[in-house]
Image (cartoon, rainbow, N blue to C red; front, top):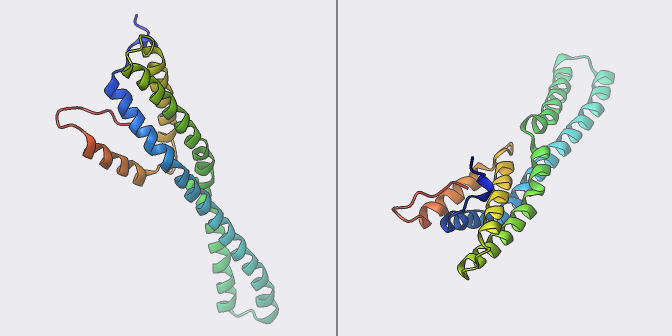
Length: 176
């Protein structure tokens, strides 16, 4: 049985991994920031609505038992509850935490890929092991990115577009 860790990696595959790592190194940080900001905004809105509801319920009950006033306070309370639950269901905060570590990991693997490709270009006979190791590490980081929820689909479309522009007509490129 052949050990996949000892199998050579083509230079073209390593270059594709390098291109992808270069893209995600710069793109994933702003995505993490957006997810964190989105989660924070929901938390702030929920807190404000809950405060408004808390203040409103006492004045409503003290001043009136008319159904429109009670309904208005009830609707704001319901909205506050919904705003609290949305980021948890969508996973914005968890995604922001998961994404935060991906930028440095992509950066590290980018450096490893660049070094290994440089060794390969110089004809270094020891280049295959570091190249295989760098590609394997890239695949681990890529798998963690693929597991993100919500997935950065807009960024994936952007790198797919870049790949399509750079892809030779006769080559089948790997998706990274």
